Length: 271
Image (tube, rainbow, N blue to C red):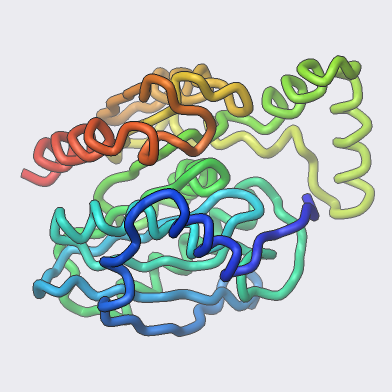
């Protein structure tokens, strides 16, 4: 819950090393802050589409990453006509240090980002949210609060953090009961239970459309997490596995398939 975070510079350098980021520098950018849950300050960045648009996408990054880790999705959304709002999840990027709660507080923060976006930009016709890993879990968890959005893109999110941690212990040939020790530590230090970090619980009464994407070779957050969440949602849902992709690698390993899946989904849900 307090692991080492990347700096903005480190995250951007990773992006430059893995794909063409030349589209990014010319974009019109606006930095600002948003008051998140319980007054916690979130740092955000608005990327304006070069073509005037009333469509907006809020993108949430993964654990230890920051808003610069979201840039790999930006070109796709610009091409599909969206303005993009990137922000640092609590404890990440330019935000003040604090613990990660695997969706509990992050989802409340995201709802504040959604509310701020609607107040800040008065021309919104379409507003979607996209999350990667922790960001996907955050996006799914936020659905319990019935945010004013039109759709969700959930990339390699977990259905519950317990199965991820137990799987990690097992893969390292450690006893799975260590999860109970970790849960006790979380409850004692942060007054939060790891057993409550369950995005899937937000889905049985969800009616918003969701597209789940997962790397077929993800051995950290297993694809079954997305499969289980698709089954759990009451709303329209699609799911796609990207062959050869590990954790949070789908858009890098299969960019054409990724764009096609997102494009087809948007055409269906935004008619």
